[in-house]
Length: 226
Image 1 (cartoon, rainbow, N blue to C red):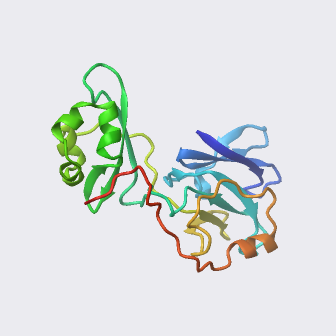
Image 2 (cartoon, rainbow, N blue to C red):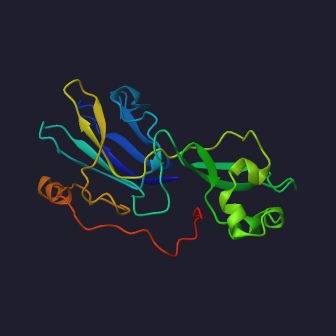
């Protein structure tokens, strides 16, 4: 799903280009050519596999080189959802009930083992057989995704977020963009929207260190290990 869009001259040719953020997807760039056609801007280093729950995008010259840089908002770190490049968040779609319909299963890694993200009550409400095989929370809490559903192979998941926090695309002398985390600052919270035309002063204030500790919600409906 498209969550935000921005027109900005990414490649410095005087023509506005289109940047789009996707939930459960990438940050995409479409370069405007002199024929006024849009083409995917893969060569500039923004459209590569950097999936996340991207929510917003804004432009400013963060590194002071006279070219626009971009900050993209994400779901944040103060949330039950966490993703890393080596351990992405996964969403499987398939007939797990065996009745010809389609269900969705969220999964996440703990170490190298894959577990369902939702607690047994939520999964059992959609797939009742899980409740019969795991009547106790502790049994379900120790079971991997494959053990719960009796599978050794899984269908190919959809777009798998590999980033949870906000990120910067900083312009480089060769015309590409370097992808890097925001300073430890304000990235613990979900960033729903960046103000359009964010100024350098605002950007500086935004990236001042923040020492306020974050806490995970004690009422989260998501799964916890015993």
